[in-house]
Length: 231
Length: 231
Image 1 (tube, rainbow over the protein chains, first blue to last red):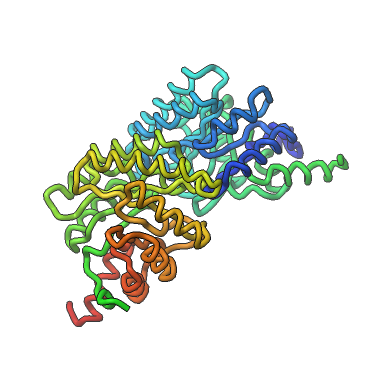
Image 2 (cartoon, chains in turn green, cyan):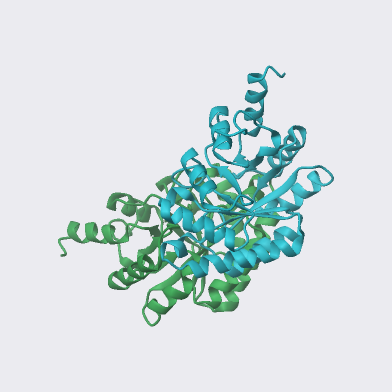
């Protein structure tokens, strides 16, 4: 147990809308709610970055988007082009999926080079820009999780992130703990995938999650406030 | 009922392996089996196109890959870059996901322009190259399915394809029939998503499917042969 236990703030939350069938109006409403609640970021598909940037500009809410999502099975060129365009269009946070096929083939060099390339683009875009690398922990064994996390960190990731939310499993307390122990203290952890209840959210934070990726941000904040007697 | 009913050939099958955790060895085995069975194509992630091309070169089996997959929510630039690189690396068939968010927002122009751009790249790569547009029918109502199919056809698609296999539903006989009626006779239909049994496969072909996207190609051909008394 850490001093984090029992504390949920809007800054913990990457408010996520990754439904392919969501249209312009849903993205707009999502961004407006993110401003109302003061979430850390909205996490949306690349095609909506310009729209989200236009709405969120001048507010503290960042635009976060997903790269090589959700399978990480694109080429380095495509992941780089996608990240470069998103940064150019106003994304401040880049959540890229690690090359799972390369990890599973023992080709750490390929997985690493992709992250290094995107990390270079993120650094070049500004010191305040953030790179998160999604490991899709549900498809990895514990040894692979540690290797992938350290590889991502060494290649320039600011965060390691558990899940896409589209794999067979999401964030677990055990995985957050494992990742927290695997990486250096300055590397942050984002838990994501299936986070809907307040107890889960608080347990993930207590285990070491700095950020939660969830579409249930509003419900979580409401539960948190009512549990504290705040209306 | 048509004369197609009851006939399954290897040329009906795009033999599909779209698991993010599949490594180099699984891709190699997949391609080898495709050669053994004489399938129309292997359908794999973009990062494996060079490997598949090296194995399949000189055989009748084509390399097919997926673009903007599975959500279709990337930008036009990224879809184009991904298709261009895949064609350059040896892909002969491009299965791109339509921009569902644009369709749902009534922004047909945006959806159409993306397909036109990729269709231009495919034509430029050679007359034998093929563009299929995935509509993700499970997320569309019947009117949207027809609109999307006609929009894709008008923008230069050779095939309209039902599903990614990662949405809430896959290919249905009803959808194949609807698409067959919606588009011109020279536009072909690919059914995909959840096709595992021989009866389903034959019903989809009878309804008008020219191609089936399935990971169960080997099992389907074995069922077909044993149903015909062929060992």
